[in-house]
Amino acid sequence: MIVLDEFLDLAGWSWYVLVGMAALPTLLSTVAVLHGTPREHLKPARESVLSHFFVRFVALVAAFLVWGVSVVMSASISTTVQSLAGDSERAVTSLGFNLMAAAVPLVVSVLWLAFIVRCAWFLRRLRGWSQVPVNARVPKEFLRAQPRLRRVVVGLAHPGLLLVAGLGTSVLALLLVLWN
Image 1 (tube, rainbow, N blue to C red):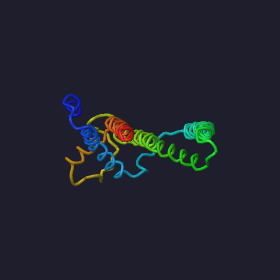
Image 2 (cartoon, rainbow, N blue to C red):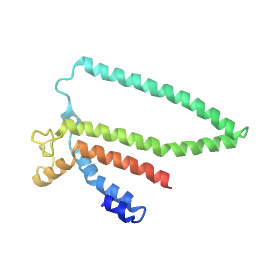
Image 3 (cartoon, one colour):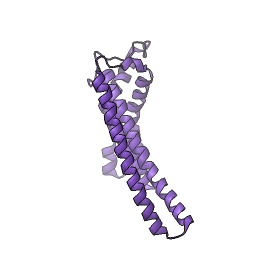
Image 4 (cartoon, rainbow, N blue to C red):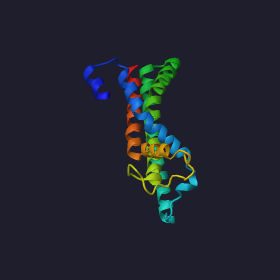
C-alpha cells in the first residue's frame, strides 16, 4: 500500500498513516513478548567477568566522549547564538529555546531508535532469528491458553521486523517534524 501511495500520490498524510500501520503489529507483538518475559529469563549463561567489565568500560568511554563533544558543541552554539542575537538577553534566551525545541524531535527519535535496537537485541536472545522459533526462551506461561495467538505474536515479535519498524517510525517522526 505504501508503494501504491507513491504512485497514486494520495493525500500527503496517508503515507505516514500507512508506515505507522505497517509498524504497529510488530511493535505491539514485541511489547507483549517483552512485557511477558521476566528479566531473569535472559541472564546470559556463560558471560565471563572480563566481558562484563569490558562492556561497561567501553560504555563509560563512549559516554565520556559524547559528554566531551556536547560540551564543545554547546560552547560553539552559545557563541553563535550570542553573536546572532547581539546584546539582547531576551533574544539570546528566545533563540536558545527555539534551538532546543528544534532539537527535541531529533533527540527523541535517536533515543527511540536506540531503544528499538536494544529491544531487538533482547528479542534475538529470547526467540532467535528464525520465523518460527523452535527453541524460543519465551516463558511457557505467555499466552498458554491461546497457543495459536502465541505463535502469531511470537512470530511477529521478530528482531529484524522490529528493527525495520523502529527505523520506519524514527524516520516517520523526523519527517513529521520537518513537514510541519
